[in-house]
Length: 291
Image (cartoon, rainbow, N blue to C red; front, top):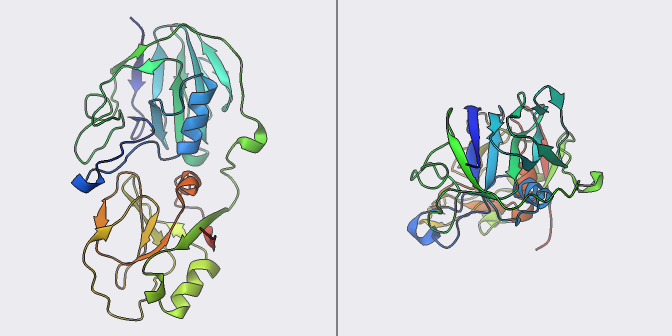
């Protein structure tokens, strides 16, 4: 039998793919890999389709034992990975032998790392995706996070050992101060002038209470020019909502699909990967881009 065994579960270790689309009208978010760019790179390195399911690790990695020879790759956050006693690099294809054990340590940079294995993770898709969504207990491994003792079956294709790597200029740099592009949201014009200025001039951090549903932004509290009463409107990953007298909230992959707060700004989809690797201790800035 071809499978991986989870020896230690790590922190919020889940199966994710490119996401679950077309169900927002039913209140079901897209889910999927938080750092979609690193996930695509991981799949590319093992010759899987870029949308394939893989393992997403958060802050603390799992310990994984391989019960077959596999081609794997590791991308995203720097978790100081080792296979058995040997340190191994990220952003390259790796050959692991049956019985080998993959382990790491708490992320030294970034938040989320990805483990891709050549072949297909053999779990049933739900509504077209294998991504785990905690709000409904669907997708992932039997509708939950990965846990100690789980045997993740693989539909392995014939292993093709073709060494590959991602060039330095293509790798996301998770150690520099982040500059996150935004566009004006539908309700941007309701912010007062000082609040508009603080979005760009100010340095921001992310609350430690943030998760896959949403990130709360700290250091600035935007104000509205009017007491705006809104009905529920569509939102999606990247939308920055501004509650009255509250901290801005960035909707993320597992977030709600409608909301009643002004949508001040939007982080473009292709920039969410970097945003989702920002640690609570890091500062970042926004800058405007044209759509």
